[in-house]
Length: 239
Image (cartoon, rainbow, N blue to C red; front, top):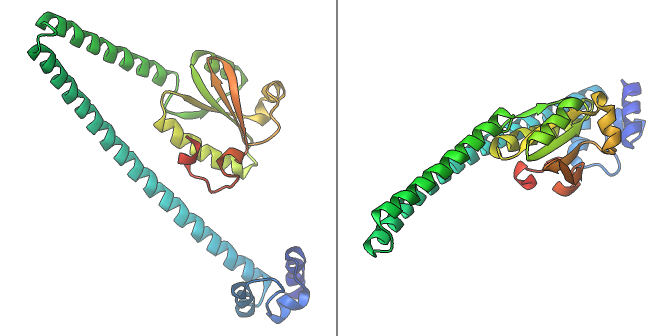
């Protein structure tokens, strides 16, 4: 009734008359005024706004999901094309070296063997990183924090708390980046469970990201300041 309308009007800067009479509030858009006039009450207004917001969020989430899937497919296609092109180029260079007499068959075989060894080392390194948790995003406790930052050469740590919706936004971006950049380990620490780390690392703003290389923190990101200061930044804005 008018009491609920009056309370809502007080919060939003209007007056009781504005809501009960269904007239536009001073400084509001005609669209909002029309909603008030048609719905006629604070409960209906809040229901309408909530439904519209939920629909917008759903559409936004679906759009981002489609964009991510397209980006993954494009990246896979580009990587495959690059690999095939690199193999073809290597073969052409080998053939040219033999043709010009700059390298014997034996020397060429050694060169190819060295390439294979480099590929094997790269594959083994990737397997080791995978066992350490690279390619995933997970929560860890205080003890695991020290173990992981010591064992992995590159680590990004997200300090968060359950009651912060901006921390939820950061979780989403961290999961996406972790899958794309397996050369780096992405972990999260719940500050409510890690008072020692909060004090030691001077965590005062949430979310906060600590960038660690070879066990040393070399950069800290507070909130979303470096991503445009908005909640709607894209994952690509972070990398």
